[in-house]
Image (cartoon, rainbow, N blue to C red; front, side, top):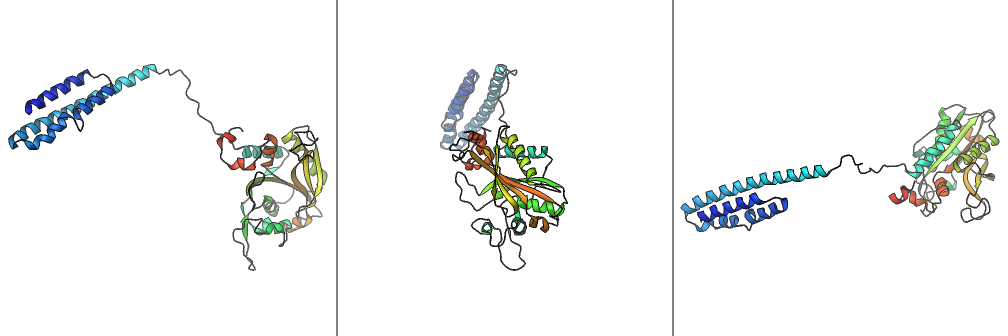
Length: 344
């Protein structure tokens, strides 16, 4: 048995010296040191030997196995060094590396920044406020009475609506107009601000409606501000965002916090006013609502409507890229589809 162990070890060392690659080295390991190898069989059969033979053969077999494992480790390390050195020689460090994909701003964020830049160029400042708002700022301060349809639980996402006297209900703001009230409370005219931000409605989502979307509203308060100032400001905005050839139309509309109120539309840039599917065959595309700030709104924040006047406007931000890029579903903006977002 001892002679067999010595012969097996010498044969293993001889075969190991001939190996030149890692694949053959793994085959050698399985053959001589694996679970079914001859060495493993010898170690398992030691129990059949006499105590004296078992002591001599077992000690020698274990000693040779340790030496084979050490030699295997050294051989593997040297072969790996050869592989690394050959790979380094084949590597051309002058070649350009793989390009790293850069992130980009969301299309809605891009439009928000563009709209803000336009109005900042006209002298407006950007103002922001809380998305969880008091009922007073969202409705009451804006001339929306207690029985107004917008206050219904089927239109507004209430946080803790209670009817007890003295309780101040909170909600997810339905527009960014509350920020205008907050600014007027703590700032004396002249005021010229725009208010971008997310708003929330109790909406059933479809291709044209979302329960969460972005708005940007504007407010200007000073002496001698007229409807002509509003029209001139919004006309300049429309030309800047949609092109210098755009025509603008204003029509009477109703909003509780302005008087008079108007809606603003631009001529359809797809059909040049002739009528198409995009504009509903009217030749015009409605962009926003606007008007002169209601005197009662000014009185609530301590601004004398006999001295000061102002205008306000508001628009849904997603509507602009929908019109500009021909997007047919507002839900695509919030679907996290990289194939869609990478187009912008």
